[in-house]
Structure formats: structure tokens, C-alpha cells
Image (cartoon, rainbow, N blue to C red):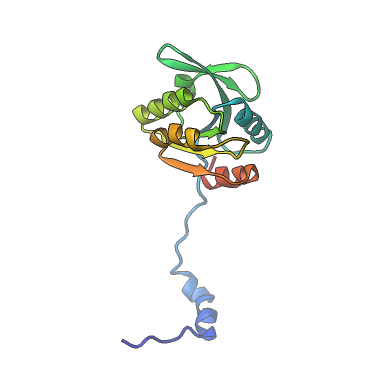
Length: 163
């Protein structure tokens, strides 16, 4: 089978009103009802900075402690909430961690997300120290795991996840 080259006139023809009728019109993606949860104090500073920016449907939280059958979270804006309450209505959870992340926090959040069928992601932020342990802790508890080279990439990743 011989292929024909795409000519400039083909591109011009595709821009006509007649050809526009064949295009697929899709509305913009809707925002998710997301929860962004820091697993340690270094990650909490990053999450608080992100909370100060304009986001569509994200709640920004910090893991505080495990409580029986639940977890206590601090809201980035102040106050506290239970993980179980925050996961009601959520369709995505992004765990943000550094090398000093709490492995128990990743397990509690990951298990709660899995039980509710909520998509979970882990972002490992660069910080002093090896990230091997935090990657090991997040791997079984996140459907998607990204080890970042620069914390400045977090807004781009959150935008891609439609936070």
C-alpha cells in the first residue's frame, strides 16, 4: 500500500467550515473532588503553599495521627477533620511525602481509598535523605506513584490530575 504525503492544501481543507462538522465537540474536563494529604511536616509546608493557590475541587490536608478505625487530619486552612469524613464524596486522593514520611499514614490512607474505590496517587517530593523507604511505603498504597525531581513540578502534576 502506497502512502500519500500530507500536503499543505490538506491542512487548509481541514480548516474549512464543511470539515468542521466532522469534529468532535467535548466539554472541558470537570474538576475532581480531590484530597491532597501531606504525610509529614516537610510535605505539609508544600501542601500549605499549594492550598494558597486557586484550585477547582481540592481540599488540602495534613496527616496528624491515627485514631481507632480512622485518622485525624489537619486542614491546611486550620481546624481538624477525620479521614473518613474527608473521603465522603472524594474521587481522588493525592498523598504528598518526603523522605521522612509516615509509613503508617500511607497505609491508613491507601487502605481507606481502596475500600471506597477512590483513585490514590503518591507524590514523593525531593528533600534531604534517601527516598527508598518512602517509595516502599507508598508503592502498595498508591495506584500511581511519582518521584519528583523538583517540588516546583507539583502544581503541574495536580493540574494534570484535575485537582
